[in-house]
Image (tube, rainbow, N blue to C red):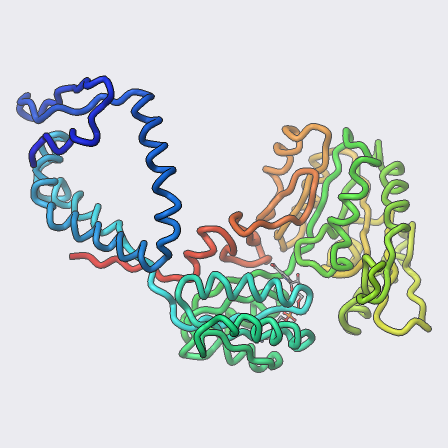
Length: 446
Ligand code: NAD
């Protein structure tokens, strides 16, 4: 290969070059440009100018361009191998120069769509979670069959109808069925992957029923997120964010704060601050513009929450607010409830209660708090609250959860990977990791 090809547009501003010598023979191989920071700035500027056009090409055109680039590497393979061999010293044959150039081409792999993706969702955020499953699946070239929770099928069907105004026929279909339809999806031979969001128990059932077809799975399962408030935190300053971290969607959120660990020094102050925020949050019918909290979605969930608060009361915990649903009120309204002086092994703490209730556990050392936070088999999210974010990050690194927020709880972003540790599931959603999980990497070698 002519060494001049290293120059041309790559010429440094200074015109400086450096001779490269063959480490095997001492012969000059060629002149390499010596770039300075001005050259770097020019290159970054050119890249920034070119990037919007590249992005606008779309997935297919970019994949095609990469495949063509791989072909170009193949066409020049012998010249490249010789240059590499001379500059680096490695022989042409064996696992050396030709092998390495071959790898350059092979690494320009592409992601094939999986085919048909089955999306099975829960009832707590039915539309949003459906989109989390549908959008990246379609983006990667798959077709999707989505099965909403039997508790909330209408919203997902309506969403799919809207999406289908713009999509080719057949690419996205909603099937509104119960657990048996979900189970069939998991074993269906023509479905290549299940995107599942729901309980850990159902996730385990899906693992079993998908085994026969060795299906790919992304499992976003149950959580029971811990929040740890360090002794230097200001209770009044954080009370509002703590409250919404726990009570978003009336607590029916997988990554909501469900167990709050508070240092003894600020325990009473924090209980007081949280109680005043919680007491002001208006719970009511959804279509009432003034409501900020709604009912539990179904009776089964109402019964679970009622049972767990009773268990706490029976064990002598102190109910700071709520805990007394009105039997005459229609609907599944459970009042905003705060429970203090509760043991870590009480069922209200240890089980995923999924309602507008927050148990507040007292701790005396940070090690003790971290140990309690890590004691469960789930690890979806967690948070650490402190006036010193650096200190909080150190604590966060010891918590077994897929996401640990500092001074907030529960925010997700389409570009930031999200997923659980331990029995909160496996596989990631969002970001590049999320997209890759909806394709099959394929290397075409040779
Ligand atoms: P669920 O597991 O009862 O139901 C979820 C879906 O699975 C429903 O569509 C249901 O019909 C289907 N299903 C039931 N049995 C099935 C089977 N054997 N095979 C296949 N599909 C089956 O969950 P839920 O009560 O609707 O949702 C609440 C749970 O979801 C909570 O545990 C919550 O933490 C979890 N969740 C997790 C995330 C996350 O991102 N990790 C997000 C939201 C909710």
